Amino acid sequence: MICPICGSKGLNTTNSRTTRSGTQTWRRKGCKVCYCSITTYEKPDMGWLSIKNTHGSSLNAYKKGVLYKSIIAALDDKELTKIDVDNLIDSIEQKIISTHKTIIEKNELIKIVLNTIKPVSLSAYIKYLSSHMALDNKRQLNKLLKDI
Ligand SMILES: [Zn+2]
Image (cartoon, rainbow, N blue to C red):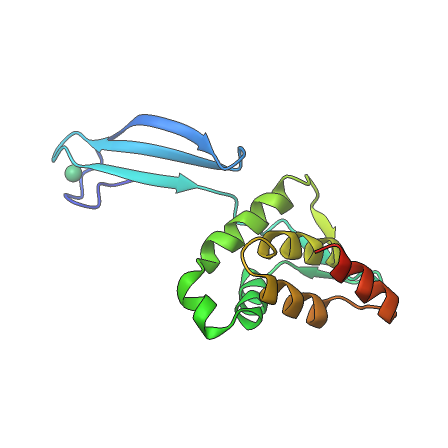
């Protein structure tokens, strides 16, 4: 890595820590030439993850953009100005990583999303639930709503 300030290759790592339940690494680096300090974060790119259709055997590659859009769609305009969607996505990805699976069922992913957005916005939780969960009957929906 080169120094973003002066362009030299003289960067030393002065401190590093594992963050976010062990899924990310934070590093503080110092430039030997201009003495600036910079911070970097390393996290997995999620390219190894596949989503399995719950009622079938087809696999789809995980796409962060699809997850992002589905969460944006569940939030109203007022919430979008207050809620850090990138942070929500980070939390969801950490939970996926902590399952130690390279293939995750769509329903399991939906449950992870629901558990993550529930404490942030109850209306987004209900909106996401109604548009992503294949509910077989009214009793199932009532049970889920009762759990809130
Ligand atoms: Zn420098």
